[in-house]
Image 1 (cartoon, rainbow, N blue to C red):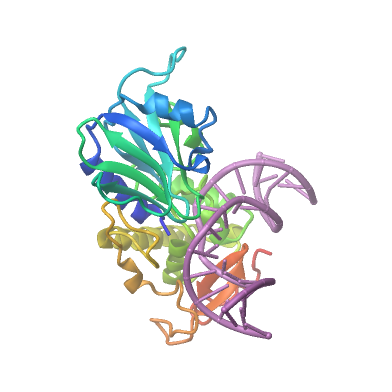
Image 2: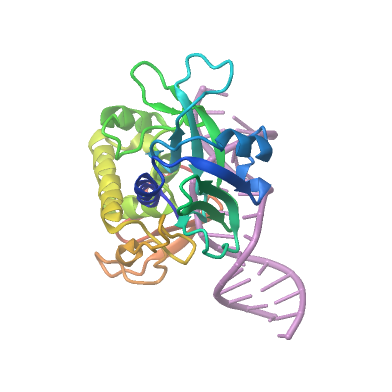
Length: 300
DNA sequence: CCTTGAGCCTGTATGC
DNA sequence: TGCATACAGGCTCAAG
């Protein structure tokens, strides 16, 4: 499942393979894949044709491709436009030769004026999608980013991530610590997998009440979040099935070094106690019952 | 305002 | 064999 490390791997691939290339033709094969683009498929296709992709950027799990050329008529303070992409659970952005047969779940195809490789958005479960976004300046001295994601917090890999503001904000919340880690308006880029991994490293139960955590405990957790993400980034992203592949179709391999996620019944790498899977927010959480015992006063 | 939980979507795995 | 059910889970939106 694409979380921050996987999306960053894709971003780096896009920067290498599509930045600087002019879009000639766009084909929308499934309307749901551009459902966040309100004006519809025809507008999306027309607006992209002839534009050049100038960069590949990312915040959390979102990535966008800034475009050259004209902004929409009437725009004033805005700084430009970009193709905004979210991979959802099963989305892939593949750079493929034109003669490569279409993937079964091909949703959008971008062909370039140079006649070389094309960019394909492939997504089995269609939780992800593409849209055309306006770039805006987020606050004074803020980053330039798509208007739709201006509410998303900086991710912990961002050099401008404010550690102490995060520590204070988390401690102000009245919720469980895992829910806080998954809240993209508090910290972005962390999903179910890396949340579980970071909590295992920090020896914290998912239901630990955020307002009972000390400042040093939150700082330590943040360091473990960075540790997990950093290890995954170095490994090139995680893959659990064939659904996630990077921009060139190459599978990630960080799954070999996971400590808890997907390891129900297998021994904890620290103490040998069998890892346990349990329901959490309509999905699953994995933890070591001994290293991460239920807190005395869990958040309900 | 903040917190919570249902629903979206489709392919795979499992049980009867 | 066929059918039903559970599961994967980031995000949105409505309700509390």
